[in-house]
Image 1: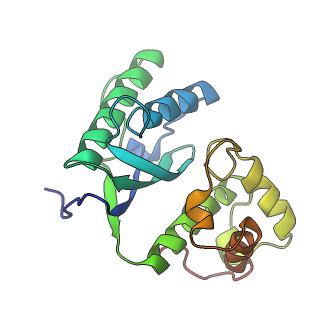
Image 2: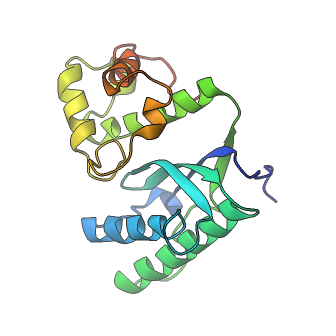
Image 3: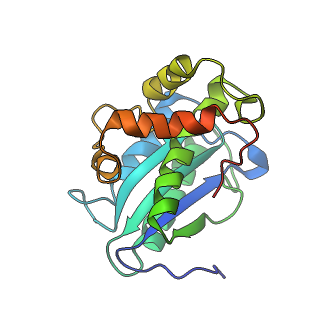
Length: 194
């Protein structure tokens, strides 16, 4: 039984990984399929169960920041996303069985500071792909690192069409948010999780 109660209007960091840490996405076609499924539950689409505030799709896991819009919205949305994508992936790749390690995990975002931090956490995940070990050693060239983050197609930060209203509601500008991200890149050993 999940040890969290989802409340309308509240924010949740939702994440999961592949069973045995296997890849969830074998190609950009898989990522695009997952992304399309993400959009099905957000306003303006079919269901409008949640607001998708932020996201990052890595090779073997994903991170989402969701705001629940209606009763049971997060659970219904995640169930449809997980089941639909698992069915697609298994059929496409000729496999059977569980794709995800477990049911999705969720952390309730209880404060503005936590909200600010979790967006940074989600966006900085991209660096694990390009600069393994950066969390321990730090980042030597933050402009190059930010270039990776800005160009990564499977994160809302890198998606040029994605609205950045949630960032601008907390920071004066994207440049201020960028400095907020760089602060963590330059401090090796600082835990990234809240």
